[in-house]
Image 1: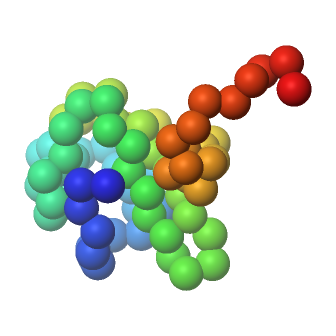
Image 2: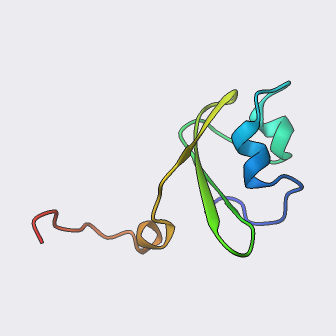
Amino acid sequence: MRYEGTIERTAPELKKWKGPGNLEQFLGIPIHAEEIVEIDDGLNPYYFFVQNPYTVCPIAFEGETARQNKLEDPHE
């Protein structure tokens, strides 16, 4: 995790975002391509994949599983 804190934007706002400016300007934090952005509203976490500074896509993502950082056997 590179940044943890409070931002002024919500997950629905990020999902609808089309500009102007880039994602870093919109969120107010440094963002890099190919990162996962998590926005947690206290009820549910929402995840977005950053393709580039101007393109972000909502994704289904198991954050808790990813934080464990262990390889799982797909045959189990």
